[in-house]
Amino acid sequence: MRRNPYIPTAGSIYFYFILYGMALIIVSQNKSSLMEMWGATDGQIAFAISGVGIGKIIGPAFAGFVSDKFGRKAMLLTSLLMSVVYFAGMVNSPNYKVGFVLSVWFGLANAILDVGAYPALMEAFPKKAGSANLLVKAAIAIGQLLLPILVAGGLFWKTSFYGAATAIGLCFILVCFLKFPDHKALAAEAKAKALAVTAVIGEKAGAKIWVEGAALVFFGFTSVGTFWLAQNSLPGMGEHIAGMGEAGAKTLVSLYATGSLIGVFTNAGLVARWVKPVRLLVVNPIITTIAYVLLLTSDSPSVYRVSSFLVGFFAAGGLFQLTVVVLAEFFPARKGLVTSLIGLASGVAAFLLPFLTGVILGDAEGAALVGPYRGVVWLGIGVAVISALLGVLVNIRHRIVFGHDVAEITSPELTAAN
Image (cartoon, rainbow, N blue to C red):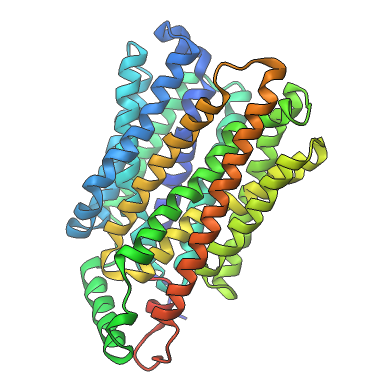
């Protein structure tokens, strides 16, 4: 059996995502040291972190087009260099305002990473695109599990920044020598196959950017929204609705993270062997909705623990990555562009859901927070229900576009997630 020549390339991408997972929490993990260095408050640290989301919103405006034009390798190398600047800059920044600018810079680097890494993995493993992209989520989770362990073990805070910068620099050198798929040749081939399918089954069966395209981009928003809401609000829900102590409520996030990591590998196994990625766009949001309903209707700590795990497993177990795969399956010749659009949607979700949570909670304190936190749970239910409805629409369109008997023209690359 011929060995896939792009395995080292994929390995470098996953390694980068492990470091990216660390980057997402490195400021919060070293908050006290940065507060001392910057002379900043908790709120100003939060402001500095929020810049990442702004960069993720700005980046998709151009990154997808650039990726489709200049290739995935160029995007990955650019993102690596930008990340080195972020890590080295943060540890030497004079105040939180400069930290905010660097966070915007890192958000841009993340947007550029997405439009290089996701399409590259789909093109390197066309028959297992779903599993390949799901492992991205696993890599991120590993990074988020490793850094707190290192910090708790006494790692000097500046070492974590310089160490990450050095590791990313080495990754840059490695990527320079690695081979990437010819994205233009693959796009032309996929487009030709798609035109052949359309010629057989009729023009109306072609993918429609304003139907399933728009639905999937919005699904990118709702899928990210459900787990962003959970990872930021579960401790408050547990403390104020279920009556858990502060320490016990914080363990809900650990259960959520455990569910996420297990969900990634479970979903990767499912889509590699038995289940089409598009089917999980219905099943996962439905179970996520049930988990949120349990949070609303129960005040039992045990129920909250189970529900936290379920939300992690079904909402944060790689559903966003599967959405990218399905979107690229519908529009195989524009992987960079569609990844960019769905990245924009995720960036908006990363801002809007925490913002709406803040609006719902308002200035309430103590016992007065019970009602507002129930309102936050209702918000989660609403977003999850919308996800399920969008998933149903996408599945209907998927059957129309790909459900015809044109096996003599199509190929595994076209029908198994380009």
